[in-house]
Image 1 (spheres, rainbow, N blue to C red):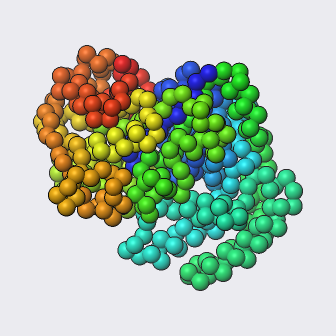
Image 2: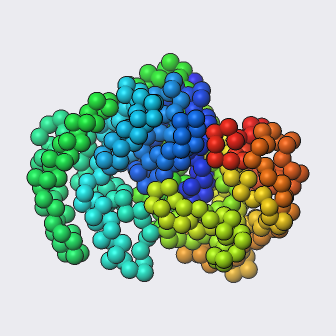
Image 3: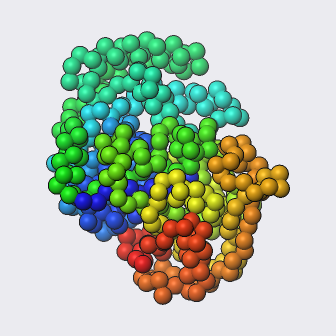
Length: 421
């Protein structure tokens, strides 16, 4: 029995989707345990190119059963669209994708309020995806949530009626338009009828699988430093993103997690507001153009920066990372010099990430080290020895700083463009 958790060691967008798809070949169960459709994982394989937001990225392995735990908040329309997308691609997830009835639903008022709150904050906006994630988690912990299990009785109608009475008052006060009870009720009743074949209590599935020595692959949404407690609060997501969240969000006891893979991009990106110590501000520079990316979920251009090894080291310590998977090393090809942040100073004194809050992190001075780059294209490399000497040195530098071995290296977006060490 193995339980492998795949986490992002930065601010998300590290390439976890590709890594999960790659590692899923030996998994019996692939699972999401936190977040919602604010996560966007891109997978490129023999079936095509997919942007997945709720269904576990490992579902492309035909032997794997997909699980969406109760710790995941669900926009039913997004879930149904993904199921159709996968079935149309010939994957047939019917009978091998299960959704916990404990999972909370993103309602129309959650998305509406998410946008209204951001607009009301003005310059102090958090930079959310406006998918309703924060408001639905707020409702979850304040006893105002609606779960799939509510549809099995009269609870859904009564809870919806109460919530609309509350939420419409806030919506109108912030300048929005009231939501109609009957319209929302009928729409979500329709969603439930279509999702019902996929609903299943996952407790026994997980516990029986652990007893039967099955292989679990757990897929984190977002990245370590968007964690509600350990991230750059308040510029974070609404759920816990470190592996311990799998205990609450899926029912995996902590002691069963045998392997934690920290997915690390060869440089750093971030979407939305919040500190990014190594950020490159010259948007016209060749380096900025080389690193530039578009977020899979929001379509926003990601902010970019040099690799921050203080962040990677902290993530490895915090989550008990056992190996690293380095992604997008190929993007660095063609650079003569590469800057790497080895640590921080604040007020002339060395500080760790954990010593400062989000606002202090925005004031730190990065201790950069310049390393030699390489000109060769590396997309065709399939062994470590095939990499240029300077690329090998870059990988070893990351290992030394994080104290964790780099076991896989991504040299392209495709599944097969991966070096195993």
